[in-house]
Image 1 (cartoon, rainbow, N blue to C red):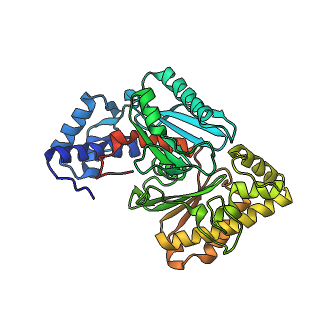
Image 2: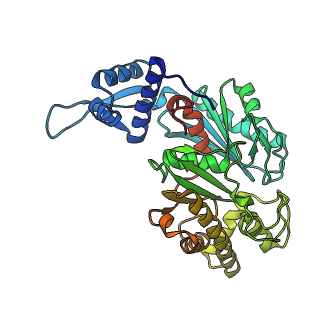
Image 3: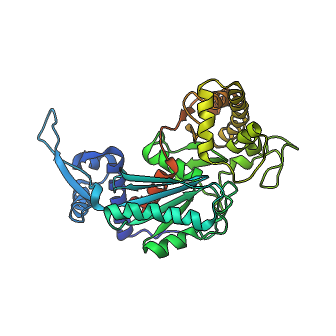
Length: 392
């Protein structure tokens, strides 16, 4: 464990970060409101906001209109003071977004790719989207990249991705840093989606929550005490590979009875097609399941309900372990009236301890392309985090 030595310079950085995060969450505030919210004295707050204004991070946006007292200057984050790019790779698709300093999306691009594309085709698509976003705005400050898979110990790329077969032993972080000459952050897709919910979605202001990512595979993003939990070897959240049926179907990971063999998007598509194949399905195939469920296709609806039962039981175990304030269902198979989500909710309520269920809010994500948004938030850490003190 690294210990930071407290000094004036460090405290100043922390307080600057607190002010930036306060404005990111609240939009516009007066100095008096920031003083009250941070507990800083008015002189320190004035000095910090003065520096941030002169450096171009903040801007004045008019005066408050109080019922009593004189109007006060309002401040907000200056969105165009920097561009940050988030890229998410999923089976069959690449999405890239460009955000301003305030996290607002400035531009978005996507491209469909073959689910079994090789590394050259995958990276060409990634480069093409980033090039298009940078070309519209000029150089970016930082890039965040997310994909489903096991991250290399040093965090420079991915060791493997079961659901994207061509993405194995790829130092994508180094490749992007070399091409664009700016810092790059790497994250697993499910954890990136959880980060997006914390920054932009249902979990803003929630310190303890779980996000269940139901896609071709199944992943879990864990937020504990306001921080994303990554684990010792950067491989937390592999919910899809928790065993829920002894001697069940053989999983691609080598175990039997993993949740993914019974309830993932790939498992459902294999049951419908009768063909078991790795890397041939894309997230777009799951949209067809949604369309079939919408028109009442009995086979699809029943399969989704069965999958929901398995997921509900697995999620109940996670809720009993972590006691979160919120649980968020996300991914292509998690829409508001999805038979899978409704079934999972029922099993969750049956198998979760009442002490954990009592204060649990269960939500469905409202974010589109959450993994790419979370990757952009990773890039924004440069401004909003002091490493080792305030972490996403």
